[in-house]
Image 1 (spheres, each protein chain N blue to C red):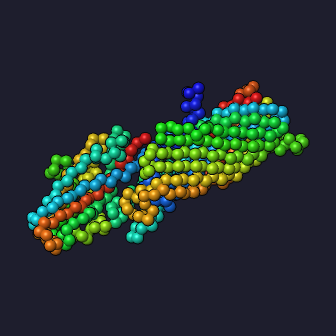
Image 2 (image 1 turned 90 degrees about the vertical axis):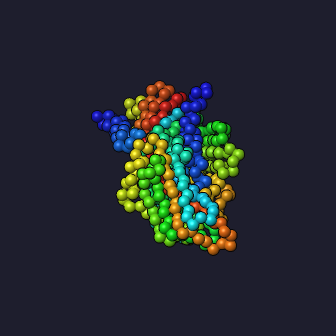
Image 3 (image 1 turned 120 degrees about the horizontal axis):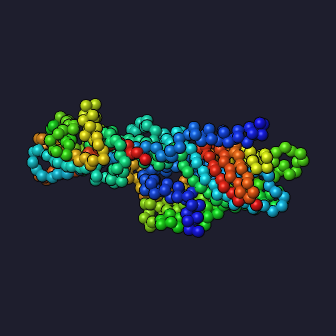
Length: 302
Length: 183
C-alpha cells in the first residue's frame, strides 16, 4: 500500500522537487519579478489539474464507477522559460531575458551594491506528473473526485482536492450520432514549506476551474474516439519571505509578501482515443493549450 | 477502412505530436556564480598591498554540481569599497588576478588616481580585453578540477584626510562566472 501511495504521489514529487531546488532562491526575488518568475508554474498547475478528466462522453443512466490512474507529460515551450526582468532601480538599463521557474539561463545586473544575479530555473523541457481519481455516476450524471489529504513530508506539507460534475446531454437528444457531455471542474492544490526558519517560508495555493463540452464515439464496441473544447482559468496564491540580499528594495525587505498569480490558461482542445476491454480502459490524449500536455490513463470502468 | 481511419487518426496525431517534442525533460542549466574577494587592511604605510585568494570549491553552487559542470566562462567583474578612512586616496591602483601559482597573470586592471570613497555604493566595473577574457576562460577549462585564484590590490602614495594617523580600507572585488551544467 505504501508503494502504491508513492506511485500515486508522483505529482507531489514534482512539487516538492520544484521547491527543494528553487525554494531557497525565491527569497531573492522582489514581488513584481517573482510574479513573472513563477507564472509558468501557475499555468502548469492549471494545465495539469484540468487534464485527463474524461475519455468517454457516454454517462450511463444506471450506476457506474471508475477508478483512473493517469500519467501526464507537459511540454514547456521556449516562451514559458524566460521573462524580461524590470528592476525598479535607477541607472539599470535593458536587461537580457532571465529564467522563469522552468528556464535554464539567468540574467544579472550591476547594482550600487554589487552584482545582482537572478535565480536560474529548473531547466525543464517537459514536466512529468501523475494523478488518480474516482468517479461514480447515476442518471447520466457523473461525479468525479480527486483527493489527497494534507500530508507532511519533512518540511513540506502538500494536499489536493478536486471534483468534476458531468452530464450526458446527448441522453436528452434522440438519434444523435455521437455522445456529448458537459463537465464542470474545480481543483485545489496546496503546498506549504515551513522549517521554522522565517526566510524559508513558502505557502502555495493553486485554484483551478474549467468547463468543457466533449464528444465521443464508440467504434467496434472496444474503441472510443473523443475530443473536447474546454474553457479554463487558474490562479495561485503565494506567500513568501523576501530577503533582499543586495539591499536593493529596503522598503520591501525582510518580510512576508502575499501574491496572486494568474496562470495563462484560457482554452484547450483535447483529442484522444481509448481502448476498452471488459472493465479495463486504456486511453491517451493530447491537450493543445499553452503547455501542450499528453496524458496516458489506465482505468477500471464498471 | 473508414472505421480504421476513425480509430487510428487520433492515435497517429497524438504519437506524431509527442514525437515532435523532445523526450528528454531536462535541459542544460546555466548558473551565474558570483565570487567575492575581500581586501581589508589598516596601517600608516604609504603603500598598500593586500593579497586575497579564493577557490571555486568555496562556493556551494560549484560543489553541488562539480561532477556535471561542462564549462565555466567569465562574465564580468567589479570593484567596490565597503568602507574606508575619510579621504583615503592614492596613485596607481593596480588589481592583479593570478592563477593559483601566484605568478601567471590572468588580467591586470590599473587606474592612475584612486579615491576609495568614490566606489562606496558605486562599483567600478572592470572591463577586460578579449585576450584577458580568453586567458581567464582558458584557465577555467577542465571545470571539474577545482581552480583557485590569487589576487593583489596595490596602491602607492597613500594619503587621507582623517585626524588619526592610521587609515583602513575594506573593499571587495566581485568576479562573475557562468557555469554550464549538464542534466
